[in-house]
Length: 246
Image 1: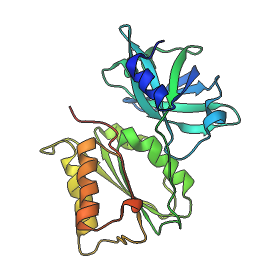
Image 2 (image 1 turned 45 degrees about the vertical axis):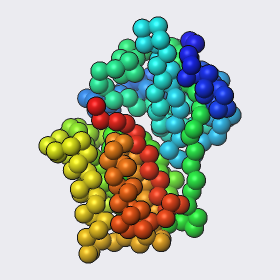
Image 3 (image 1 turned 60 degrees about the horizontal axis):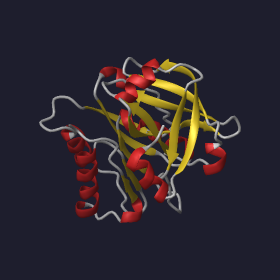
Image 4 (image 1 turned 120 degrees about the vertical axis):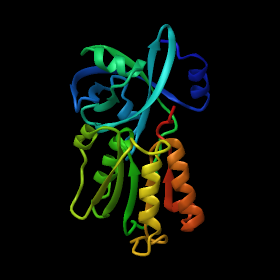
């Protein structure tokens, strides 16, 4: 598939193109589907792996290229395999995930992904996410066995709370319902802000690390709170909006 002007831009930015072959698929919940792929082009060997690593997948949308980013789940460089999780809402990527069969191929581009670990290891991780960023959350937890985490996770349906979450001893998680808030993400922003700014907050801005990956406006609002109200330094906060409310 030709990748159009976006592909030209990504190549100019040193994007690397690969082809993935689809293996088995399974429904994780009624709203999420996991697809196993093999990196026939040697993606993992060529690019290495890191926590929160993601790739851009290219879908055919009525003859036009359509690209979306997905986090690698359980990458295995020796086997050249990893999983990808798709939200099953209306869209070209979801339709592909529901209809694709073993042996099919899909183009992937690696460009823009990266991870800078905090040194020395933080006292605690404060993690804010939702089902879209949950694969990245799990990769963070797997990569930081000695650092306890406090997590706030937004859910849009009860079944979202059954998605795999790799909590370790000492981790704490608070689930926040998405629906019912006056604005998208409003309940999540309110809950996390309250937890960070209340008199009893267990927050050390010089020793903790903050990782935010939810809806874009919510993520920006929480990042502002960290910088302006709590005085958290830029190198102790990673904030990336994983999707935008319509």
